Amino acid sequence: MNAALKLGDVREAIKPVVFERDLQIISNVQVNGEYRQMVLKAPREMLEQCRAGQFFHLLCPQLGGENPYLRRPMSIYGFYPDKGELHFLYKVTGEGTRALAHLGAGDTLNVLGPLGRGFTIADNWQHLVLVARGVGLATLAPLALEANRLGRKLTAICSARSDDVLMSVHYFRSLGANVVTVTDAEGTSSIENLEAIIEGLIAEEGVDAFYTCGSNRILRLLQRIGEKHEIPGEIALEQQMACGLGMCHCCVRPFRKEDRVVNLRVCREGPVFDMQEAMPW
Image (cartoon, rainbow, N blue to C red):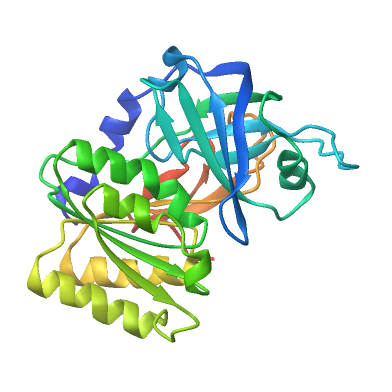
């Protein structure tokens, strides 16, 4: 495999301080028919520890008849030390996120983080391709900001059921990304079409690295294309968690490591992993 895949030493060196704080909510609004965006006022020292791909463990309140017990892991959608803001994008799917949706400006939310290991961008990766679907694009948004800061070329392939629930398209474009949208409604989101788009990018422009989050079928596709063309990549994995700190081993998943399978904690050794080591589910 490409030597650039071996990034364990780089990620091992990044050991941020973890904070547990009550943060004030600036806004918590609906952004389309499915997703909400929450903006929190956060201290600069916390935000300066954040990295693209990391997450926070949120203590969801007991509101609106909901009684969530465990914290909920949520990937960072944006962190802005100069503005003192921490952003999350989420979809209301259960009692934890339903409780979050009841919070408004001026309320407080207890957060624990930043947690986990984030994405890496090797020095020789000049053209980065992001491929994700739905809320998985939220995890990749800070990576796009970092790519822009480093002056890297960026292509974002955004997939969704329909145009009205496509996420982060305008944000990616504002960062200079070439954005390709595919939807179920238009019949353009099939694996066959995605493969044709990506193969076209490789042939016409060259691709140095892939990034994705969440989708099993997209993971399989990028693994196959990456192995074929020797293109490295990383995936941010989603998993149920209890502690978020690596103590409870609730989030263990199997990974390929050379000629063997090992069990790793998504919250501690991840949530970002080498794409070729992740095992489809």
